[in-house]
Amino acid sequence: MFFDKDIETISVEKLRAIQKEKLGETLKNALKSKYYKNIFKQQGINPEIKKIRDIEKIPFTTKEDLRKSYPAGMVAVPFESLVRMHASSGTTGKSTFIFHTKKDLENWSTLVVRGLYAVGIRKTDVFQNMMSYGLFTGGIGLHYGAEKLGALVVPAGSGNTKKQIELLLDMHTTVIHITPSYLFYLSHVIEDEEKIPLSRFSLRMAVIGAEPHSEETRRKLEKLFKIKVFNCYGLSEMNGPGVAFECEYQNGLHIWEDHYYAEIINPKTGKVLQDGEEGELVLTTLQREGMPIIRYRTRDITKIMKGRCPCGRTHRKIARIKGRTDDMFIVKGVNIFPSQIETVLMQTHEVDKNYRIVIDRKDGLDNLTVEVEVKKGFFDGELSHLTAIQEKLADMMKNTILVKPSIKLVEPGSLPSSTGKSQRVQDKRRV
Amino acid sequence: MGKQLSIFMENKPGKINRITGILQKEEINLKAMTIADSGTFGIVKIMTDNNKKAFNVLKKDNFLVSYQDVVVVEIQDRVGAFHYVAKILEDEKINIEDAYGFIIEADKKAVLILKVAEPKKVETLLKKQGYKLIEDF
Image (cartoon, rainbow over the protein chains, first blue to last red):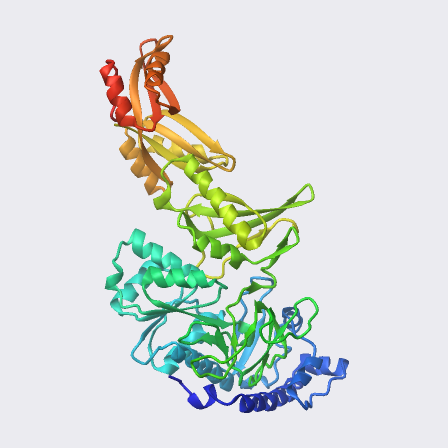
């Protein structure tokens, strides 16, 4: 089932032709912005392209470039054409602004609808949006998409969990949009604090995003709530959520290629990699008027998946985000992503899902410590049982990440569990 | 059967203080405390005059706390009193995993708390020898 079958199942040749045409328009449009005018002039770039891969001659745009052109150096239209701005969450530095025209917002909503429709959300659904509204794009982005699709939208925002539960029950909410960490927290409140049986809820699906998470996390959440959970990808620089969306097959996220040109690069050398090879995702807006961005380095690690999806969509898929280039840390020469640690924790019943990774250096040697919370129901007062879990977790992690960490057990609720993006890694080596 | 409370605790300053503060506020008399430590965390075991209440108030304050069956036996506060008990258990080849105690009345009465694999069996054994066992304070 497709929201827009013609474009979603368009032939690959036609899709590439659209991309080439739109890329040409984007480059011309970008010349109207102060930032790209300068860059093109400095580097002697000809915005006329003959083939799509000519894009590789254009330098990348980074978060730092966005910061340098703060607040509006990349805007390519007169100010009166702009109707909205958003800001990135600023978790890795000063926040940056993204500006949209009316057409941009319409396009954004259309892409969101394609995704929501692909996972089976319909007009008859009650869509409780438990993502933050405001400068952050997570809430508003899916709000307008769900509304455009015709679902009944409950704009709950994030937080105030008791009120959320009341809305879930009274509105007979069928679909929620939420971060994975908040969904875990919601389960804890429903089960342990409020003690409400799941049968009283009408929930059938959750769309999760805004935090990289593992497949195990998704399966665990599906089990906890007995619902389907779908992954949605986006970033404020590329509008926000809806850049790529899973379909019913839950195996990779279709990236809407009529609106984005995707490349995977080696984050160290900048070399463009082949489909199937893992690296950093680089995206170019193909239809954005207000603020075109060319070859934006997302810092998200993924790969473009080879082969056709059985759903019939021709837009290629990216794999679940493995981590961010800036989340990745190196301990004893080994590249490690927090998601790998998360995968191990999801398979262990004695500890909770919250964790923190602390890295420090002693006498020239890296020490990796993973802090995890002991689960309430598990504690029986036996020290030997706790030390056995420590040993088990350390061994399981060594099998996954090749480095044996120290496991530090902490009290339940003592690690930051967040309703937004959570900070999991503390690298004390740089401080 | 006697009970003790075990509390999971990170090895950090001020942690014990939190427990004793709550017990004081709730007017619970702390009779004995012992700590088993494993580097970054440990288990604090306590015996109070109202274990049930202590369990509830600590749980309410989000402590990770559990009840454990232990043998609580009254002994005389004099030389050799512990030895007599230990001897009885040794004769039966019973291992004492953990032990601590406190004095109720100086030079007269004390209480010994024993962690063993089969507390019921040990209670019966000590009862037979004329010892007074304490269920709960």
